[in-house]
Image (cartoon, rainbow, N blue to C red; front, side, top):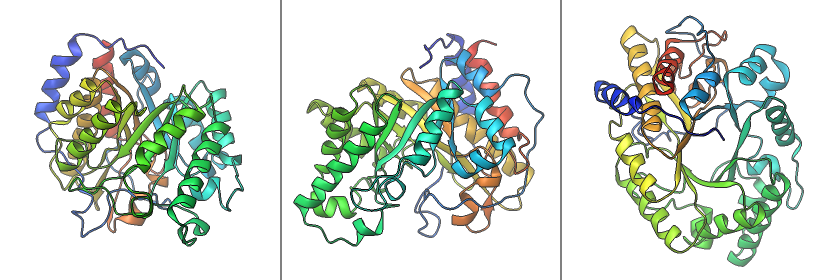
Length: 376
């Protein structure tokens, strides 16, 4: 991990930019006719908008000077088969997150049968290019194999299955994963816990168990709880804050909070993001922007593109203003493989590169913030 060397000037300057971003965007997961803000869908194509000239320094170089890691979620098929995609992942980013290949349905397709092939390939790629890996994810209500969701297991057996899965996966990658998203999307927007398989069968204690088991398997990995719609101070982020505070008092090794950052230009910006992240700082945990993208209703106009740029900057500035924010990850960097069009009808162009691997003005917006933070 890079040593934080952010200049003193970033605080006032970035704070000013945050205040100026008054018309940006905040995704509301359930605001779009009940559609969840985040679901890992198959990649879909989108057209380009808001192009910008290629910067003289990569995001990776600028982020190093700013004292953070900059990452991307990685589509493993594209990484293996498409040279321009591979080149951008290797040069622009200093950390990578597997988009799908470390999720339960891929890792353990049959009970007790593990397939780490694609995860190992991504880790090897990262090691070859001096990158760190965010493991995503160990426990989620989604992308579970049919043998698990249809198994009708009792509480004791399900708890044992969960224990074995976390132990097997974390142990396999031990020493090679920087941060794990241990528990993913456990809350509803009203601050209640999601009424999923895990809560129904195991009760709320499953969260603490998952962190303890992950820590036992790899004591050196940073362990995160990750969720969407927690960018600003609201019922959901406050409930998560209260849970993290409670778990840490109990000695549960929750070491980080992942703020996903799936935004939409239709909604107001989370202008209190820095204050929200600061309260997690006071708990002594790390924070990270883990899945940033900003979707637009198509066709995109100039105002939409401007709002998208401001939204990305709002997220980045929140991280740069937070001492213990370690990294900023975009959820896929190119519109060519964005999950958005397959989930949100009529929306797209959410990433910082277009489908032809040309940087958009959102790329330049992030570059400007990183230059400011790095004193360059």
